[in-house]
Amino acid sequence: MSAPVKKNDRLSVYIEDLTHDGNGVAKVDGYPLFIQGALPNETAEIHVMKTLKNYGFAKVVDIIKPSSDRVVAPCDYFKQCGGCQLQHLSYEGQLKWKENMVRNVMQRIGKINAPVLPVKGMEEPWHYRNKAQIPFSVNEEGQAIAGFYKTKTHSIVDMDRCLIQTGEADAILAGLKKELTAIGIRPYNEHTHEGMLRHVVIRKARATGEVMVVLVTKKKKFPQKEAAVAVIQRLVPNVTSIMQNVNNEKTNVIFGDDTINLWGKDIIIDTIGDVRFEISARSFYQVNPEQTEVLYKQALEYADLQGDERVIDAYCGIGTISLFLAQRAKAVMGVEIVPQAIEDAKRNAVLNSFSNTYFEAGPAEEVIPRWYKEGKEADVLVVDPPRKGCDEALLKTILEQQPKRVVYVSCNPATLARDLRILEDGGYQTQEIQPVDMFPHSTHCEAVAWLTLVE
Ligand code: SAH
Image (cartoon, rainbow, N blue to C red):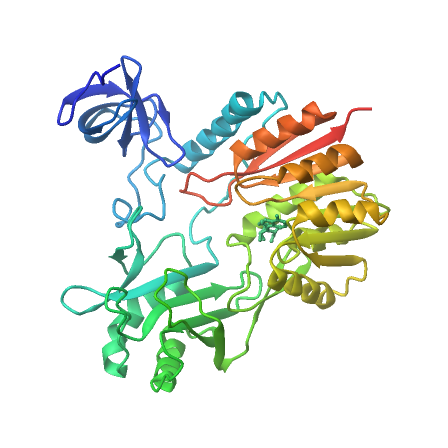
């Protein structure tokens, strides 16, 4: 079949859907066109940019009939920056879209008929990210720039504020680049590998208000460090920790191996629910703590712990869910592939005086079968895998060992649906799926599902 439209055609179309990366979808004689900036239920005049055999791309020339959910994106950088995809859709519209998206994916990929509940969203869906990683560079005139990347590129959109980051991150975004010349710091240029300042990472503990600023520099030798500390203290008066991290590699990876204290404490402390967490410059921590609490409370509710259960938390990271569950369980065993994260989990268990937790580093699909062989069984199994979902070998272990209850926390509805199907075919029943919006204005959606063994 040849495409029914060609490059540079202009036509009017009805937008039926929205893709996972936030583009509108229209069909011309069954041929899908992906249209940046268009929303479902709109009629738009479009300009065809490119056609391939089975689909094409277009951009909006004019919205003829707007969606009732369309709003003016509040951020000035929305069109260039790749950070948010859905600011032109009202927050209510976003939540409705995410709910439908999860429901459709469950049906289409997994034939899962369990109820999908309305998405739990945020009351105030702005300034929710507790971690900003800001690249610094120079523009063609040699001036310092700082911001976030354009979609699918490595070029920085220079900006002074970001509506999903904290005020402290804005203070660095707007303030630091103006001060760099005065204190003699050159931003890093990734093309020439010259200059000093590569990234500034700002982390804020929502519950305690503690703030960490990390300067990622090319070299360890940092003669301007005292001046830099003074500027940061002026820009972010509530800062409690200023760190330097050294990265001399030609790489897109932000951090190098060496982290040095410049001023204040090495860590900040945050709490989720009643559990305290130590956060260091490089440790993994959920970026939306308010919604993390919502998500984990849901996981805890679905785990339905009475106090005498043994629980396995697979893909446990720094033990966030494990420690949440440990408040109500007899024992929790967590497994995670990154050894550093397991160190953090153990430290956080001590920090919270838990004596009923056990953490081990390794692949969940190897460690958990071994635990079962050693007689370490679980009544409830919780999984929170990365986007690619659970390893097949882990699902096989679940089906063999048959824990009474499985709670599945997912950041990717497609792999959730696939894995739920495998579990259902092996004797489990999905009871309910609760999506939670962890990343307002993005197309991501987390969800928690709860399964029981069919007797
Ligand atoms: N539950 C954690 C984070 C889960 S993110 C929290 O709330 O903090 C998924 C985690 O799975 C990551 O930490 C990743 O390092 C880990 N992971 C990836 N593959 C794994 C595997 N095969 N076995 C165990 N852990 C794995």
